Every structure is written in structure tokens, then in C-alpha cells.
Length: 219
Image (tube, rainbow, N blue to C red; front, side):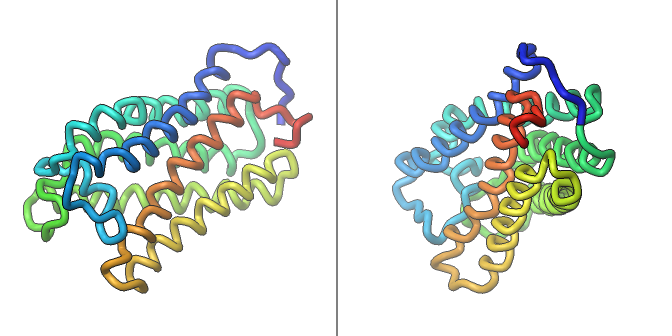
């Protein structure tokens, strides 16, 4: 991995957008239910808060506005940085690129195909496409994280990042398995493991970008 200069550039500071995205998304998840009187976070999905018919949609859009932009800016900048500086291995960089593609699909796909009715049965074309976008996001997330995990445990300079990717992947698996294993009244609890996995790992990538992937710090 190439060493970077101690002086940070604009692209390094843009890594902080990953942290901003995490804070924004967390705020939306925590505070939007206040505008949705009947919402039960234990049993309902996060996406119900932003559904077209949800009373919390306006508040969600306001709180999640920074997330919508920053969640794409951060991994895109990370991709540019690792590509230009040849950070770690080709396998690692491929994992970062796929993760970035996932964030773009997520940002565009969910904006184009929001759920029409919160907590209702999936029936319309838009709702089916929403599920298709979710499937693509999950698949790309898993593949990208696996590549980063493999790279991290093979390359000592990014081992900590590989561990973070492993934690994110385990959170996704807990969410995926848990949604089928737990009673419906606790669906929302395990579902949040999945949704926060990618958002959290995005923030980790942003912190690494901010640090310049400095090998002296073991990152």
C-alpha cells in the first residue's frame, strides 16, 4: 500500500461525509417515528417510515437528506482514492468498487421505487421493483464485503478494515436470518441489523479515507 503525505487533501476531508451519512440516517430512524403515531419499531421495517403513504415521510426526507447525498459521495471518493493510489490489492479495490456501485443503486433505486404503502402487502410494479432493488443491494453488499474481508486478512495493512467488513457482514446475516427466525412482532429489531450494517461500514470507509489509508497507523 502506498504511503500518503501527512497533508490532507480535499478528497480526504470528503471521507467525513460517511460519518455525516451515518448520523443523518440514525437521526431519521430514531426521530421519524414521532411523526408516525402507530409505528412500532419492534415489528415494522425502517422503509415503512419513508413509504409514500407514511405520515412520517416528510420528516424522514428532511432528516435523511444529508444521508441521501453523503452515502454516495463517500464511497465514490474512496473508490477514486484507492484507485489513484493503488491502495492494497486489486481484490480489495474491486470490493470497494462493488460497494460503491451498491450505494448508487440504493440511492437511485429507492428514490425511483419507494414503497407506496407502509406495512402493506407488496403488489404494485413499484413495490416489486423496490424489492428487486433491495435484492441487488443485499447481493452487492455481501460480495463486496467478502472481497474486502479476504483482502483484509491477507494484507496486514488493512486487517482492521477487514474485521470491520466481517462485522458488517455478520450484521447483515443476523438481519437476513433473524427476519425468518424471530416472530413477526420482532421483525423490525433484526431488520435494523441489516440496514445499519452498510451505513456503518460506509462510515468506516470514510474514516479510512480521512486518514489517507495511512499504513503507519495500521489502517
